[in-house]
Image (tube, rainbow, N blue to C red; front, side, top):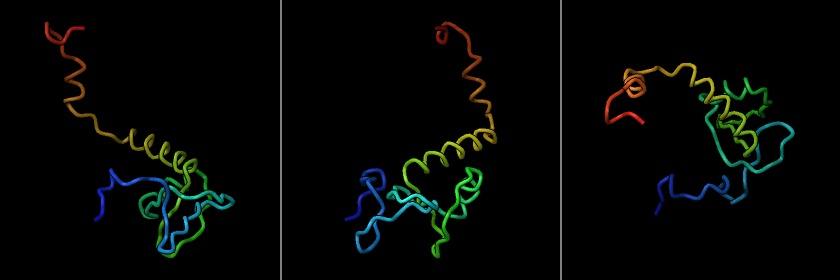
Length: 101
């Protein structure tokens, strides 16, 4: 029985032979905790100035420290393009007897 992604332990990524995958960044020999799509995350990895080894499956395996670097960059760039909706502004500008603090 396969558990949902939220319930599975996120210790490490293993291959079929139960050997842990290594980080794809050149010079890093740590065990990988995440595997990311090269199409989706390749841009962020390049902007973080990380040198990645090529992979036939077009996957990027990252250890904890390198994943944190890439994820910070991704979140900051996505925040720039996030569309502000009228609901966000509406909650901030509400005034009245029920919303005063």
